[in-house]
Amino acid sequence: EAEVAQSPRYKITEKSQAVAFWCDPISGHATLYWYRQILGQGPELLVQFQDESVVDDSQLPKDRFSAERLKGVDSTLKIQPAELGDSAMYLCASSFLAATYEQYFGPGTRLTVT
Amino acid sequence: AQKITQTQPGMFVQEKEAVTLDCTYDTSDQSYGLFWYKQPSSGEMIFLIYQGSYDEQNATEGRYSLNFQKARKSANLVISASQLGDSAMYFCAMREGLGTNAGKSTFGDGTTLTVKP
Image (tube, rainbow over all chains, first blue to last red; front, side):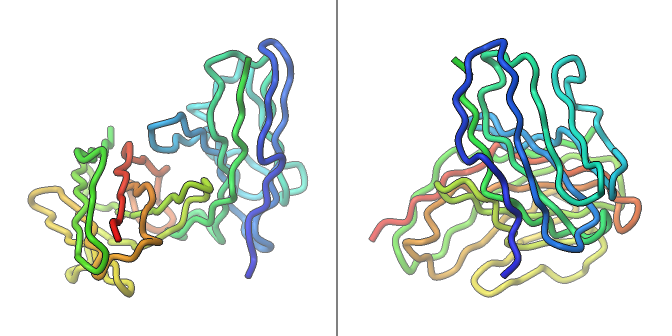
């Protein structure tokens, strides 16, 4: 069964350091989402890609966060510099089309900033 | 702005019994979709069930059903015949718009379900 892959699964970093997360969506899925989930809360959309183009990044803190999906397949989310408040689960999801209601989520990357 | 409210931080149910998880939503759109996801302790979000705002019948998927009351703006999840493996966090979510006009998903803060043997 096809799955969304994410790495690393866990990351511990010191504040002010740079950190990057990688996501490989299900093959053929044009839409890719990055969510941030703070402990005890629901996921919040950070950025949505349609192929290689950003569709929505209104909640992405652009002074420190960046995301790219250069070839419209896998994607990287970067934080530089990391802050203590960035400690959270970062979830990647994909869907066949933006109009498709079902999103498939990866296992997530749990980030701890010390 | 769309908002999802899940008022039950934690719920307990006896194995083999049914349980209802509450979800209310707020939107000014007429077209929207409602979703439920399950998140086990491993962290992965698992899609359970979907209800469109124009769907006249309540959605069902195996042991999951969505009790959709449009006038009350509620979309409760009913899990029948609970199993130990149902113990997890459950999230209600909504997307305003449908099809190619669908916007981003907004999630509630979740309900932790514990199934007792």
